[in-house]
Length: 270
Image (cartoon, rainbow, N blue to C red; front, side, top):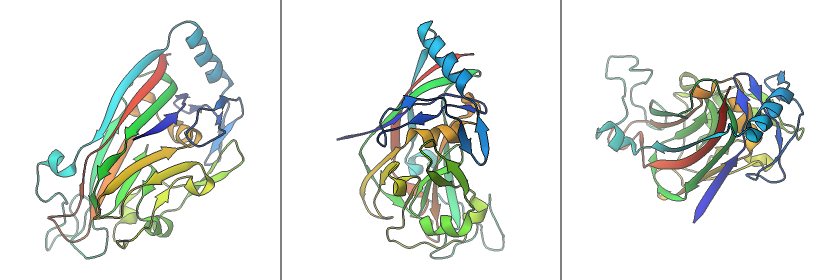
């Protein structure tokens, strides 16, 4: 069985494209309506025109790239992945000493799109095969440091302050910036406490097992949300990150099985 993320994107530094959608995850129609995030608006008429012209002139290039968040034990080569602060030491790389039931240590993975400087993105399609997935304890899945999904909604609501993301559909979505310093020490439970940006508004679909249980993981996000998260980041710095945390068991914590997806990115060089 295959789950597909379809994302149509145009961006250049602070410039972004607004796309309207009939259904979550489906291709949308390009419009010239201004896009807003955190109170900022950007005229996209020029970008729309330039991308259309690049298509007509045959200047569009395609990047095919696999994004892999490797099994954290395989990637580190360590039996104990979490780097807890040792006794007598306050922190270690921003991590704390062990305490049951709290997020105390984390392991972070970052993956960039392999795009050249001055690239203008015109279309991105992403797909992932449904895969067996197990993790321990809490994960945060981010794009350009904006939170896409986590299994600890309570910590996000309690510790992070959202900004408003205003969509072309006149829907307002809370947008959270991942911040480990603010999140650490927050509690968690081995129950469903999931956050998936836009899911409550019908703009995303996410599913994964409860921590320490085996199950399938999949994500699907409305394209316009991702476009807005891309707007103020240079093409060569577009980054996905996956963060896994631990509380008090070095032999089990900060572990996740491999998560992988493939990308086809269409762009031209300015």
